[in-house]
Image 1 (cartoon, one colour):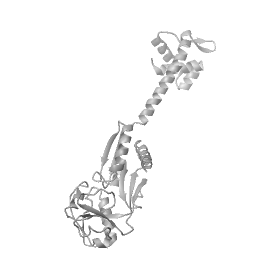
Image 2: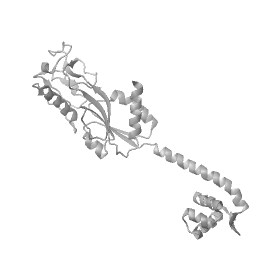
Image 3: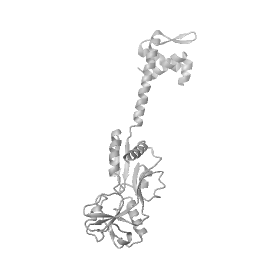
Image 4: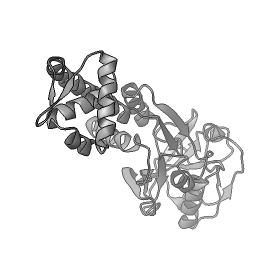
Length: 297
């Protein structure tokens, strides 16, 4: 049964006039009349006949009317349900995680989110995939998690502060001359060789560390290496240098982590996104993640 013809039959039955029904349907009356004849032929029965004051339903038409109303309402409900499901079926989400952050917090929530949306295609990048701003503005990245200073990335329209790290640490080998100390200041580290975050397509973290060393006013050297972010911490225990650290407690074996007493080196973890994004998964992900974190606290 043609549902379009069924809808037209319902409107004709309601208006009791081809002219009025055609006006509602934005059709010529003769076109609507022809369509009704075709519909009747498909059912092999007459549904409408002309009367003195317009048209009236035949007995077959009267019998079809309540069933047609029920059938069409069911069709509309089914269509609405399918459209709603389509609206809530996310196609993909692209996350960028900078400086080895968020694995412990983000992992459990990603499990929840992906179970809610099993068809979701998930891509996870690091800073080597693209630059942070370029990725967000071009649409290559939907959400970026990055360590920065308080006033950095203010040009990004979607900017949510997640955490503050008020204390800077230094990561040392256990046999370093300062390893037995309980705390140090930057002046104690003058002349040291620092292992910085590896060079990436976006050197944001490395540049942040250099700016902190420059701010301290100490003399320092940089150990030039080509490690990935996953392995550069292994250079510390074998004595290639020391590194600045304030973004987590996990450190390599045979090393120590000492707090630096100097103030004014606060850093923050931000979740960045473009508020003009057309990806329908972004806002539900962000809202769900923030709710997940608040419940954990």
